Structure formats: structure tokens, C-alpha cells
Length: 445
Image (cartoon, rainbow, N blue to C red):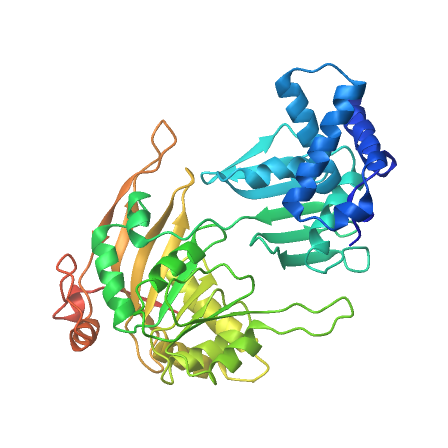
């Protein structure tokens, strides 16, 4: 993309009020005074510094008379409009913001600390918002127009971007930017109240004993954050292959191979799906396979890998409960181009899945593990889930907080034996069930 295409003229934007006109006017003056050929040869940081310096001279020469703070704000706004993403630039730099949601030019929302709030910001027009969107998607060699009105991509800086425009959107261009937080350790998640020491002790044993673990939860519950923390428990000498739609995982081990799916290009060709990557990973001699999210036919390949020698694999799935996770895995596996009877898929899940970790986001924004359940059924038996840990929430307090307590239940004998054979200690807070009556079990269809 040429520099001229990235530096807008005032005619290319609408404006609202005197402030918008002032920004547009100085953007035009800035464009007149800079050498585009010279600017193109500069790095991004140098380009921004040069524009700020030139604009500072223009303001000193032509006015208006501004305070130091007002002058800095005007320079920032004009340069952001000319070179960056306009009013979104400060939001992208705010580390407390995890999600930016633009619902047309007049409504901008952000998520901070698990809570969504509307900001007193707006784009000058739908055209200005569209140009910002085009600037964003062009950085990943994508385009958005009426023939291609939806784009889902990962920016070079790591954020995931989703765009949908009219005619599919009836409220104008819609832009969602999801920033991925830094990776957290399990100890840090304890500090957030997401789980406690006893649950970490159990999960560490399950990961190191190579149980196949599915992390389940709705959107925004912290599945990837937990998956990343759990992967930190994998021994450093093992070969780990991660497979994701948008690369979010940040594993710290030395022997990690990261794979990312690829959408089709503008001609509709060149797509590489999660399923393609899962199949290929089986030929790469993995010790562990970590799938960021299963959402289609790759579920069948993942289940087959889990039940045929690739123990210790980890994956996430969208579901509202442990029971729903099993049903969803079965449904997703049926979407494969290989026709497998539902009964056979049921057997496959009983054979492949060992542990389900359910995450929930509460009304106060807190994200917690609300259940750890072991799949204690075999073959064609109905799914039988043995809950070994559960968060029991209390009613919301007047200050809007949700408190509660974690409860623990005995481990099935088969699980205890497997931990023992892997030289993993048995967590005392849970104990071991000597009879089925001592288990907190329930059947799921």
C-alpha cells in the first residue's frame, strides 16, 4: 500500500463540528508539506516522529494558540488520522482494554476487567470508519468490499480482527478487535480467583500423567488463557505442536512447533484448515498436540489422535457445560467428510477424552473454573461424568461481586491408579473413591 493511500486528505473524511474540521484541515496541510518519497523510506516509528515534527512547525507558524496539552492532543489526533488508526490508536495502546467493538461510526465499546463500557468517541462518518477498516485489513493482504463483506484475520502485532460491513450489517461497518493478554501462569490465575491451589495440584498431575484434556466454555471465559497456563506444565523435553486459527498460545518450552490455519485468498483459493493441520501434525512425530479450538470436522481427527497413542493432548471447545462439551464434540466430529455413525463417535469420545475443565464468566466479569469432571465411561456406555471439583457461587453481593467456594470430590479409582503409575502424587484434598457410590457422577446423553 502506498504512503499516499495511507495519508488521507480532508475530502476523504466527513467531519463533525469545529474539532473535526481542525483535524481535517491540518491533515491536508501536513500532506502538502511532506515528501512522500522520503517518508516511504522511513521505518514506522521514524515516520511518525517526522510527521509530528513537521506538524509542530505548521502549528507554530500558522496557529492556533494552544496550551501545551492541547497542542500535544491536536498533533496526536492529526498524525493518528494520517498514519495510524485515528481514534482507535489510543485504545490499542491502553493495556487495560482487551476488546474494542465498533458498532458503526457512532458507537464504540471496549471491554476492561471483564466489563463492557461505551466510550464518548465516534468516527466522523461511515466513510472514515471504512477507511480505517481498509487500512487495518490491508496490513494482512486482505480486502473488504461488497463482494467480500466479512474478514477475520490476525494482525502482525497479534490482535484478532473481525470485520463485517453492509449489506450484511444493517448498522454500518462493524469492527471488532480482540487483544490477547500476556500469558498467565497458574499461580497468577489463583491470584485472580480462577482456581485454587488444590485444583492446580490436580491439574498438574493430570497434564504430566498425559490425560487428554478438553477446556470448555463460552466466548470470553478465558479458555485460551487457561490452555496456555496448562501447557506450561508439559515437560520441557517433549515435542509440542500447537494448531490454531489465530496464533494466541505462547508456550515457553524449547521444542514447540506452531501451526496456524490460512483463510482463502481474494480469489477464494489457498485455504488451509485446522483439519488439514491436525492431519499433518500426526506425521510430525508429536509428543503432544494442542489445538486452540476445535470447531469443525477436525474434531474427528483430534479424537482419533487422542485415542491412538497421542495421549496428553489439549484442546478447547465452545460449550456451556461439561455435558454440552461432549455433545458438541460429537456433533462437530459428525461434520467431517468421513461418514461415521453417531454411535461410533460416541465410543470414540469415551475412548479419547479423559478430563473436561469447564470455565464460566460471571456477571461481575470474573472468570473461574466451575467444574473439573473426569469422563469415567467406556465403549458404548452412556457418558458418565465424575465431578472432582466444583465452584459453588453465592448470590451477587450489593457491590456487584460474585463470591463462592470450591468443593472437591473423590477421584475414580481408575484415575488414581493412572496417576500412581505415572509417579504423580494423589491430591489429598480429593481422596479416592473406593466404590462408585462415593463418586459425584452423573450421566449425559
